[in-house]
Image (cartoon, rainbow, N blue to C red; front, side, top):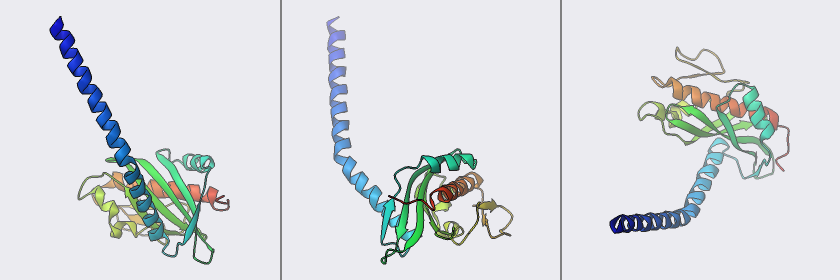
Length: 201
């Protein structure tokens, strides 16, 4: 009986110490991780809008999320949306950050720039865990750059060679990843149509 009590006490102490150490680790790393995430986000904004100087963040995204779901992209979540301005205060368009939960390896988080005319200015992948050499090619410029310049309500992907202005070429042997990224972009476009004429205040 004494041995059981002793073993239980030892186990309790080990668990307690482990919990305290994990808590300390979280407190130590929380701020640096948040800082790095912010830097990554700002860098993405600047890549989709090279002239970006400042931005206003939208505070209410329920209507945008509803628009995404109504458009049929139930796996897409609108994380953030900002209105971008150049150094003269002229509106450039919106940067919309979304997460598609339907990637082959899980969530794919991306920022999509859309100018005031509804043209996609760029796509940046912020977080992705797809298969190396296949789905991870979604991060490559050769894939992402296909979206820039498209002005359409919906982007489509093809495995037989692009033949329309609103089409992009799928990543070979990575159809699930291609669909997830394309759906994410289309979700961002659906959100844009709701947010485009709304103040970022």
